[in-house]
Amino acid sequence: MGGGTSIGQGFDAHRFAPDGAGRELWMAGLRWDGQGEGVEGDSDGDVAVHALIDALLSAAGLGDIGTLFGVGEDSLGAGMHGLPMLERTADHLRAHGFVPASASVCVIGNRPRIGARRRQAEEALSAAAGCRVSLTATTTDRMGFTGRGEGVAAIASALVGNPSGIPGAAL
Figure (cartoon, one colour):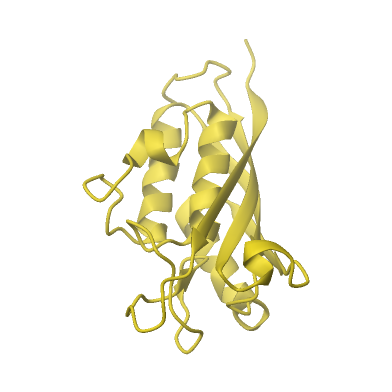
């Protein structure tokens, strides 16, 4: 039985914390100072990383972020920043015989403005995921919760390889 590749998709969305809540804004593995409040959530709320984690796990058939880290304020992921979560996800894939090959993430929202730090974010995501990760961003032209500035969302696609061809087999 030969190896192969598979693709997965992930999505995440979070509401911005109210003004004065003191939440740092984390996106695509980076802290964005001066861009307003961060998002509500048990972890840092980095929707770009969370969508990427779901895409990687989906491609490998290993569930989703809740399967790996749990859900809620007492979960393994509570209080964690995105990049360590992404590193742990990549390790989990490798332990099950899968290798991240490439990924793409699109952030949907009015802030933060990704363009100025795109390269830095791509480097951070790529290092943590163990594969090339491209990052894009868009707005919804004032439509929906992201367009009204109530929150931010991200969608991701990931390609993983299974060199052994046996799901769950260690390399």
